[in-house]
Image 1 (tube, rainbow, N blue to C red):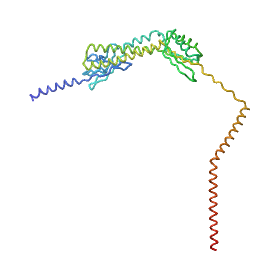
Image 2 (image 1 turned 90 degrees about the vertical axis):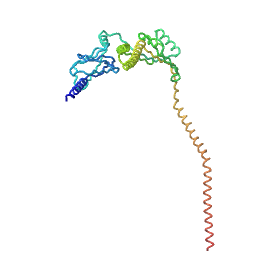
Image 3 (image 1 turned 180 degrees about the vertical axis):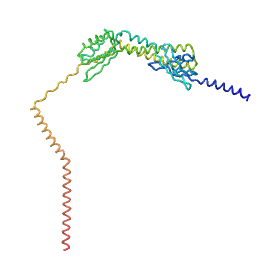
Image 4 (image 1 turned 180 degrees about the horizontal axis):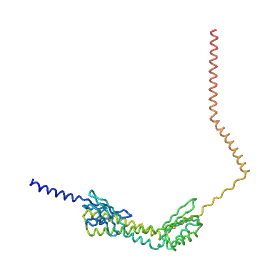
Amino acid sequence: MSRSAPIVAVLLAVLVACGGDARPGVIGLVSEAGTGWPVVGVRVYVEGTGRGTLTDEEGRYAIQAVPPGRYDIVAEAEGYRTTRHTGVILREAGATQVDFELVPEAVAAVEETFARPARDPMLVRRAEVTLEVEDVDSTAARIREVAADLGGRVERFAHTAGARQTRRTSMSLRIPESRLNAALERVLALGVLERLSVSEREAREQAEDLDVRLRNVRRLEERLLRMLDERAGTLQELLGVERELARVREQVERYESQLQDLESEAAWSLLQIVFHEPYPVVVARPSPPARGRIARAIVRAGDNFMRMIAWGISGLGYLAPLAILAIVVVWSRRWVRRRRGSRSGAGSESRS
């Protein structure tokens, strides 16, 4: 017994130590509010314990071996507001799930922007015109002059034969937004108006939303670049950061392209013009008088009668052979009957 006592004591110490490592912890996901993208490199810690960690390439974290109790869990990262979950209860069994949605600091700037007086509207305008003109070639030349005089450009040109063999041309112009009305006035004077449509939409809110998203992903790009420069973490973690950086750069290019297209549409209004030459006039023939219609009806009736007679004469060519054949058949049957009758009479006389 005395020899086994030290061994038992050592085993108990090992069990106690192992039991100490099995204390509960905190796990969760950190994402960006509004987009749902995982945020890499966020510092998450349990306040008052000195225990914390950084999120991985998927935005996940795990803090192990935290004693049971009530704690405040904090997540903080550069470019985002610090977020805190207070009164989180950690129990003895299992890990507690605590997720974070970090709000970019740029949102505060946006809120201040909306609190300021409203800025000038950002209008995307579009007009469509259909005209009847005397000559499409000269009209096309004059429309080009209008675009050049107002600082615009011809974006598309198409020429077709059109309906009823009339020449038809369509042109698309890009005109500075402030000069669209002047362009419409000059174009409408080139022919007879058949159709006019003008539309506009407010794009300021859409542009500001794209700008906020672009600034957020650029902040994330800068943070990922700093992580690569510091060479902190394992090789697998660095590879994950590089993959995330490639995805973020692709998103930056997409937002930049969308914002540039929207700004271009607002700065350059679209004017679509369709013009054609006059359609040929078809002159209706006057109706003939009633006397003439009756005369023509009598003539048509005579023609139909003569046509029926002609059909009958033509049919005789088929009926004559049939009639001759029928006469031959009837005559043959009568001749056969007569022969049979004469034979039967001669036989009766001989027997008598």
